[in-house]
Structure formats: structure tokens, C-alpha cells
Length: 171
Image 1 (tube, rainbow, N blue to C red):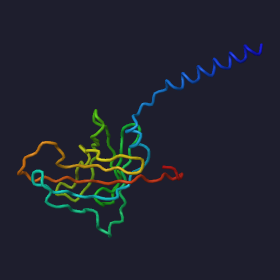
Image 2: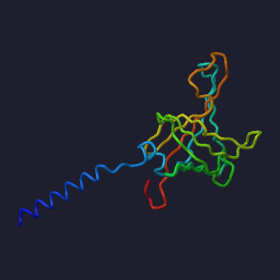
Image 3: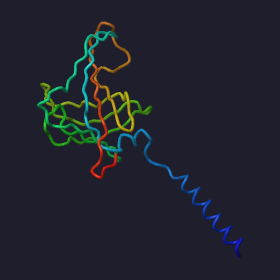
Image 4: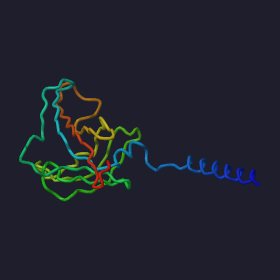
């Protein structure tokens, strides 16, 4: 009787371990990093090049009068929102997001109000993921193509984000 109970207990335990180990998460670890919290903009740099020679660097978000904190939030249903882009107080712009097959390029078709002549842009429609970690994310946009003319001027804009704690105090 005791051996039957022990055998039954071990059988149930083995089945539970096998079933639990077969559970698959629908998101990759990279996707989990994106959706694990809200990202607050910390820095914006613009690197200006002629061909492969860097000619200057501009720090773009130094305006201390800007009180509109910018947030980029990714959701598990592959939608995202960007709040207060270009330091313009605005309602969150919502859109779809996806990663390239190699998970090195973010495509977020979020349309944001900005200070350009058109008054709106899609700043993250093709963003190279330079760094993505538990607490920081760096995206590069602009002229990021790998092949370019050695005489053509190009500009790469780099956005640095830090993960913000959620209301319950977790990351």
C-alpha cells in the first residue's frame, strides 16, 4: 500500500514536471524585455556624418523648460504608445510594433506630433536596436542603412530610454 502511494506520487510529480517544461511562452526574451515596463526617454543625440566620417554630434533634449516627460510603452498584444513626443504635450499615440526576423530592428508605426514642417512623423518606423537590457534601451533611427555614399550627408538620431518602475514598485 505504501509503495503504491509512493509510486503514484512520483508518477504525478514526473507528469507535472514534463507538462510544465513543455509550456511555451508566446514571446521571445527580447519581446519580454520590451513589454516588461514603461520606457522613459533619457537622452536624444544626433550624429551627423559625411560618408563614414562623423562631422558633429548634437544633443537634442537639453531644453530645461520642457516639462513633458516622454514615455514609450510596449504591450504584449504588439501594440505600443508614445506619450509627449518631441516635448509636445499630447495624448499617447498608439500603434502596432514588431521586430525583424533577426530581432535587431524595431518597427513601430506610431505617428507622433512633432516640430517639423509636416507637424507629424513616424520616428520609430525603422529603428535599429543598439542596446536592450533590463533597465535601458537605445534605439537609432534615421540614415542607418549599412550601404551609403562616401560623399552623402546623413544623420542618425539615437534615443536612450530607461525603464520606469510600475505603480506597484516593481520593474
